[in-house]
Length: 145
Image (cartoon, rainbow, N blue to C red; front, side, top):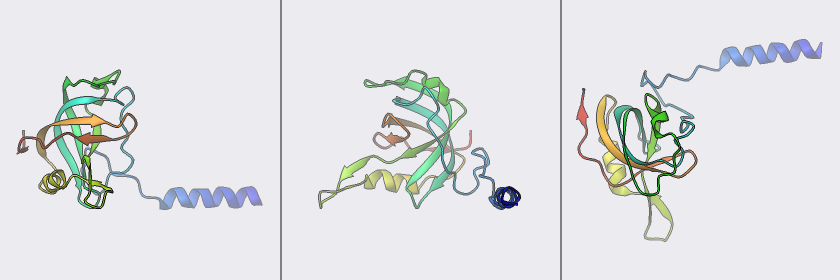
């Protein structure tokens, strides 16, 4: 009896949980975008198309079309593993007046101007694990191809 109840509850939970939107669809909030294996530690330039922008978190997702040059400090074993993968980009962190840390205000303003479908070339640095942070502010992004 207990086994039947557990199986039934598991089935109901699986049915009730909505599927996450695909990165290419650009619909809603894209959760749990991981750095592709071999790309952790990347420092360099990425070119791609913006898939989504999350104003609440101050981040955006880029589907990588080209991996450009690498910078000093790059430790990624396979930077090209990011090609055709969505990558979430975070703003850099700076010291606030109270001594705490906050997202870079200039980069945050830049992110608010982005829209899905725009293309951009951006310089990023990895924290070595699961995040890419902006380095500076990229040249103005452009719409379309």
